[in-house]
Length: 152
Ligand code: HEC
Image (cartoon, rainbow, N blue to C red; front, side):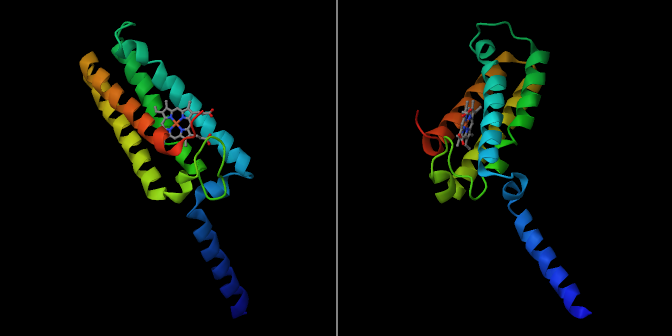
């Protein structure tokens, strides 16, 4: 009667190991992961981009609207990374995403932190703060793309 229990424990342990890579478990096919992360970037790009005219002074600054949009961006900023699991190479991602995991992780952290700072800036209600923080987020997109996204 002991053996099945042990087998069960072993199965649980390997399931736990699997959960270490949630992306692998979340998507049935690598293509699903690629589509998911591209969709997330599309939304990130839409919610980031719509603040551009305000930051450039080409559209009126509505502090509440910017705050709400940045809040959305904060949620979206967490989404793509779980869809870069092992075996999901491809799409517009460079091989460096998988061969330089630490660098890719750092680029993600820089981005997420800069979005958090943008939220703090938006909370001040001051356009000059929003403008500077918006620029930093844009620089963090570019820094990651320069190393980890294929040129088109
Ligand atoms: C840590 C790295 C990283 C950061 C930060 C990042 N991106 Fe990307 N982005 C990528 C990679 C990698 C791809 C390619 C994904 C794929 O095709 O599999 C991509 C793809 C995209 C795409 C194309 C999506 C599609 O439909 O193919 C857009 C648009 C985009 N990013 C916009 C942005 C914007 C805007 C920001 C910042 C607000 C940003 N990204 C921040 C790595 C990053």
